[in-house]
Image 1 (tube, rainbow, N blue to C red):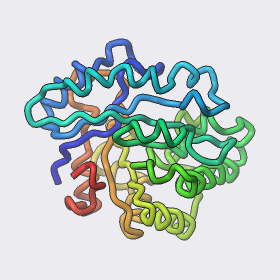
Image 2: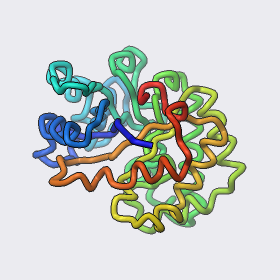
Image 3: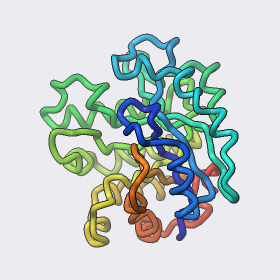
Image 4: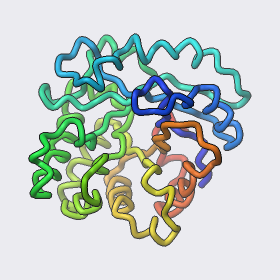
Amino acid sequence: MKITHDFHVHTNLSLCAKPTATLEGYLETAKKLGLTKLGISNHFWDAAIPGANDFYVPQDYDHVASLRPAIEKADVPGLRVYFGCECEYDPWRHGVACTEEVAERFEYMLVPNSHTHMMMPKEYYHPYEKHAEFMLAAFEEIVDCPLSKYVTAMAHPFEAVACPYDNEILIDLIPDDRYRRLFAKAAGKGIAFEINISSMVKKTPEEVEKASVIRLFRLAKEEGCKFLFGSDIHNVPENLAPFKNAELVADLLGLTEEDLAPIAR
């Protein structure tokens, strides 16, 4: 299956992105790839929600929306560019770090349960079970919270970011039945499952097939989840390597157009 969308792109408005991560550069890359849909999803925390750390305080709505006029003016034949965000999970209020008023201003919203390097107490790294339980709880709280209707997809679900050990340990630790229950809930709410290809870029086809996240994708599909793809890129690539293996994953899962989230079709 040919993948013609990428809904997880960070420009230099995200503090962790490179200064050279410009919208113009991404538009050129999208053109080379033949993408028809490109989603700009900079990191975001609504200023009306208490609890933002030093990383998130500057990344409020006014900050991320400063790029919106350029997004709306983007003119690449055959390409639609979307104004979205990667909104943080709020562990204190057990949901999404956004108000409904602001959530309505985005065209789509990604929310991670796996930014444990920022949102989880450091003592939860060990034992592994504590770390896994944090992500399970976060996933369920995102799905159950009042703003879940604005959540387009779970960003890199269960792939603990900046983990001090191999995050596949955590994925493998959680049994199928616990995943299935959460994935069925997400499917019932219309929340898609992001296939984040950033962790697969350097893998061989054989390594991709054996990757722990493939198990998650298969379980999510069986429970009725829809999917969208994201590169999670933080800089305009010198080549097209960040998009490698997306179609391989789609083929491994037997995805069709019907398996994609409505926004990605």
